[in-house]
Image (cartoon, rainbow, N blue to C red; front, side, top):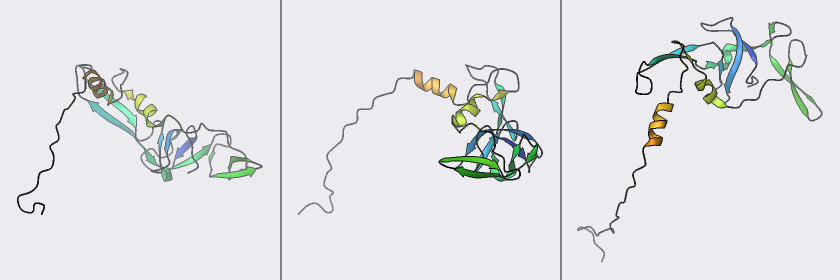
Length: 161
């Protein structure tokens, strides 16, 4: 997969067809990308002690890599990505124009950054979904279990000879 975090892509299939946006995260294992403002999902969070009002969060869901194409901002067109090796350096080039592409950020941060930056529809800063459970678990001390182990006994049917 030749796309990287920070690349501009154009959605070529699906409900958001024609949208030009930035890649937030790339999953090389599953061949999917998270694109800013594309394939938005809503999550309804129930009220809790920490958040008595509850909230509705919006976040990006992944889109398959075949549904996006690299968008060259200099030439304002969709292009495929190729590689050119000069000496010990390998750089990405546009296959249409044969010009080098701008450097994109390498993938880092993972999905945690996407989940933390979720937008709340109500306008309140959204917390990651698992954060409330994690704080409750951190407050509870872990119970120690003292279990005595018994020596194995011989069965009544086939004891030792």
